[in-house]
Image: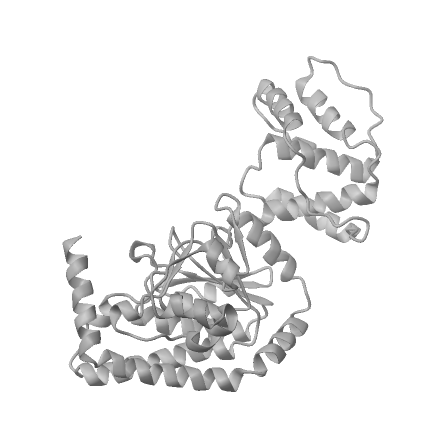
Length: 394
């Protein structure tokens, strides 16, 4: 193992890395004390994971990993200190010796936690596709993966800021249906690129088709009703990993999610009245319930753009993370959540949602009926035309 971890070409770099590591705060392993002790099987599994890591964790982390491994398997360092000129072995010895009298059990737990942290930073879509992923690879606008008890639905139109086209609406519903039936414990939504989702694709408004505006509006209302129903009825924990700005329906449906984690670079905007429209995604019910009526009015009626911090303060977002550590911190938590008993998670979610599911479906139906009316109204058409004119001048 030592040879695999420390095949570094330049001893001087290692020496400098050790000096840097000694000046930095200790790595936060999020161990809760003696209550958590990794089993031998978990330790062996962590050793195997080290061999499959794709990203080089860096010299400081490699030293820490080496030291924890030695402490967990041999106990406190008792070897003589290597010569000052033996940079590699001296660095490894000092890292191990720095653990002092840390017990084998504690070192084993910290080693497992550190490897899990490294593993969680490797975003699911970058990993080798599993058999389940191959089945789901037919999507045009999504990347859908299932691994480690987590199904990830990634919006995949980065050039369009992940705007939702009619095709994407259908594919998201299909992905939710598959996720509801697969063996995963959690389902995660996120976006590819710098944006989470910019709301409806503009072509949804401009491509009327031969059926005419009235029929197109009714069809769109029916599609939206089905789409929101998939969130209402989804039986497993649904988690939003908001990697950038979110607009429109991408924001309103968050009230139907169980947890929403956000980068501090995200913003949340629902410009309905600006476009002559009205709220959807059950937000006319969930937002006042979450934020209070007055705050919800600012967002839904008066187009207030929320920062991630404001959205968290109002309860729409569960927690906000610095963008530099967002993916690492969130995926570390998700991998921990995914180890919980999946049936217990699903049944508990259904108990919580079941209390108001009938109400949510009624709200969804009413919102979609009102939207069909708005889409056919003169002021909505004028607002959308004004919007397109402004866009064309940019």
